[in-house]
Length: 353
Image: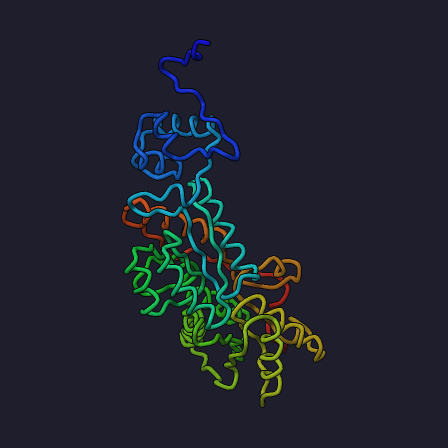
């Protein structure tokens, strides 16, 4: 029996099944380009003409080729993965930022590896294992101040690093101006006529300290000083993170010698905990005591909370663009402080006469 005739210029499609796996080399052979060109095209990186990129994508789809981190590892040892590290994954802020990241990185062929380092051992393990095994091309840290030793491990192994939602020395950072946001909140209270304004800040463990805590306190003090209003140090309280910490911190403020007429809370979650304590104490918000915070959490609108709004989803998208710059070998774009805006709702009013 004569052998079957093959098309003279177009190779037969490679059979795909349990015994055969389509590789990146098959896509390269079909399109007549190098492995690195295929990798860059499928990952959305620069250096590939639009016509070549389209041809590579067509052939990849025709062969049912799926980019895997292992298959795309070339001379640069690219994995196709970006690690996202946060200490508080379930929060609205972190989850919104991660969604923004994923929406920008997925079309570029990059997968997210999300790690929550909510205790010291987790953190030590992550920064020891990830760079050593070269499991990722980049690391995005959310609201975590990197230690010099952690940053050195990542840089020594060629891992790109971006700080999202905070500032970290030695790496590109994408964040709001926390000091300015605090000034916006406190100035609103000052303009309403308040002078006894409390600061309900938050405390984080040493291994997860935020620059935001220091910056927001600095903004509070700057606004008070600019208005010529002295700060009563008895009204400056730092408590645990979250709504429970806000409730306990508010209880502490109410037990003092003189209660404030207004409270600036570190975040919406802290503010909502504070409001719960005020209502349980029979204190009307805002007729007897005003509350303002920072974030514009979805619950802020539902609870009519006055706040300084930020957009963590936009922070995530901008952080992803910086990651793509670094992985493409470009100088990372400069991202100025993201804008914030005061949203006046029903928890602030002039002080009681």
